[in-house]
Length: 371
Image (cartoon, rainbow, N blue to C red; front, side):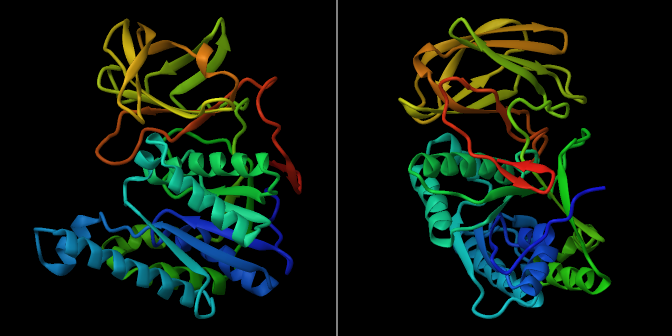
């Protein structure tokens, strides 16, 4: 039986939504519970969901979407988010903030080392002083969702090094990977009325109701939140099945996901946070057979190191020199072989140099460990 998330009047909840509608899908029940408990809640919308061309083409009866049309669509979706919060009983004006980040562009913000984006996250945490931070999960297969989790982790680490105490992180899943997930979950049981109000909030996103049945399926009897998986945890759902360091190299073992027949055409993205060099961002294009490939600095486009890749059947082993990158605080990696839009899997945190890495503060939530 999953432990229940208990909210109190002293709680301050900071909810990050990659797009308008994620606040209702992922936290429509949480918003109602917070209101009843007297807890304070703030919503931060990362993008306006304005790169959503087919619903716009259908509803506006236009094929060509110009920049001004996209901006108008984004403004409409912002208003829908405010309307949805009103359906959930949130008073006006709602404690809602919009970052106006590019829709489908959060991975680019991460991989180009956008410091302004990290600074915006830090500023929200410092200003709100949350007891709970609710984030999309690293395991979510929407690239905007999973990339934000990595940005959040980086921002919190930087705040901790400055002596700022951040709240406990809980994550929610909107787009699940096909492989089974084994996450430590706490849940909220929704009454019939709360479930109905969540459905009303979801339907307030009128631009998305071409898929009404699919969206309303998120209004379930329970709303689930998970503790982020630790780097040492098993990630059986993830193509990157193991990682270790030794002899000045990072070794990754990748299992080709079902449905794919070769590694060629896929990439591996790596985000490292180092104590001396700051954030490093690398991209590798995988070959179809064993070879050496350049490791591209995603910030500059330069390549000053190479990785040795050995491919045997459906398994690839990658060796990347990391001597100059140590000591490492955190490492995240992603296998990217996108099928149309969604990812095969999200980001995975890898074990870092624990002896020389930063101290991680851990909090407790019932029987779950939240770090």
